[in-house]
Image (cartoon, rainbow, N blue to C red; front, top):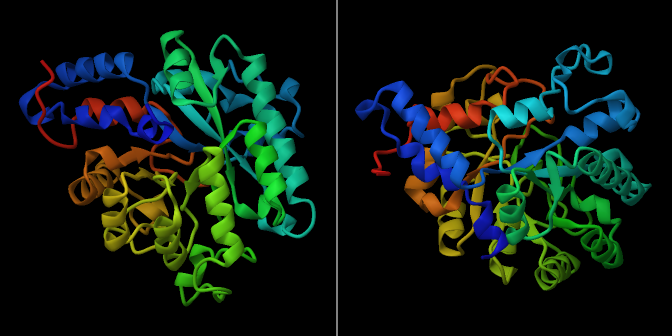
Length: 353
């Protein structure tokens, strides 16, 4: 089974617990059965960034086995959502941990900073090996799940992290990185980022898509077996990348543009390409991508899942919550949303018996 296929939010099929045909408790029991049977894979979490920025990268400052709400290093943080108790409450089966460094490091020390974040991820998965298992394959996700552990993978967020060097990309793969987002909020010399699609951003396109070197990056990621992530990427570069890539692509944390017209979200014509190339969009929980406002509900998230599923198919929609990377959330910073959205049965009728 390919890693792309494993990313599919398998439980989405069961969002079909049909709340209108079952009591809430019956729906919740079905959700529990499903999440006990298949791993729910979340495509994006920025916990490592917070450990680096707020706790100076020192695991002694943050005990992930405890609820971190009262941790002194977390006080005043409105984008700190993750710890092992909350991951367990949401029955998360596998997690892509983001290795992120800001665009300010581009042309400076982006590769070094990214390696520091990768190191943090590897250290906390090792320290908490009773709950986490570092994996690099789809089979690894299943192996961790069958051991009762949360499969832990790494995605690099931002192509600026490779410092315009294919050699760095290869070394990231050897360190266990299994996807790379081609951009963050800045253009690279080889790929335009999504803010170029917003006239009010003040960021102009450099390339109107990908450069020849950008095509080389995509092809090398394909050769290595590293997933190409198009969240944060301009629409022109999305379309060009899908045409160039020899493997399915992912959007690790994006929503449907038709429901919220933010440049971070995926347009209908691109969703059709997602369907045609067996790719996947993993739905983000950030208010301003879900509702284009400061508030929202679980139903609003379900609407995005429904919309993408109806246009591209259920095999092509997943979840990439973006916990610890979003400063506001209508989900009360609680991973138990994963369980609740399944239990509520918001998607479509489906007989699991």
